Amino acid sequence: MTEHEGIISLNTLPQEHLLVGLAHPSSNIILYDYQTNELIKVVPGIPWKLGNPLSREVVVTPSGNIYTYRGTEAVNQRNETHSVWVYNIHTGEMKDTGFHMTHGFWIGQTETRDGSKIYLNTTGGEIYEFDVVSETFKYLGYELASSDNRIIDYTYAITLSPDETKLYYVLSVIQNPGGPEGDGSGGSGELYYYDLATGQIVFVQQLPAGIYTSADLRDEENIYFSHFGSRWNIWSGDAGLFMLHLASQP
Image (cartoon, rainbow, N blue to C red; front, top):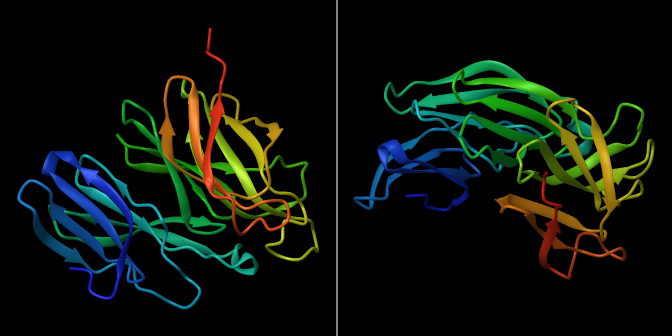
């Protein structure tokens, strides 16, 4: 069903017993019935153009709407803006929503337990909130404080705290102004949280250098990331599981 392609993102639409896959590099949407083990449909994705790779996330709503996005990856293209697209499984319509995002493609997704809100971040450190009831996006801000003039080259991990009051994330590769791209000249492995009530960005602690990714894995006291790399080479080696323990809330 995805000949010469792979599935780069997977979500579910339980109401229709569907697996929703995102094919790479076409950005086609793959609809698969997991009860009948049947391929239902392959939906042509967002038209591709040079320097506009697809996201690693797909947003699915109970209404049958499927949201996808193509952004950028190269740091020198981060100021470009691109539209979010939506496909509806009932009408078969694929359209441009007109809502624009910037600073890379979607790379992380975390959802409240009641399913009312979804939070996304981009490779270049922008945070967005998606309201599932109204199906609207809201821009929350950049993952560094306005007083910090460094540039986020790459960040991949974002997860709600166990009490769902904060968004925790790790900046994998940071660049100093005018510095070389992608080598961590401005830092690597910095853990922050975004306070959802106040919008405040708080530095928590320095973690081991390297690349951190997540898949919205958390329990009552812990958040889980994958990690690889080291201070000698942030892009290679030493892969493992990283567990962040958070104190119980009063």
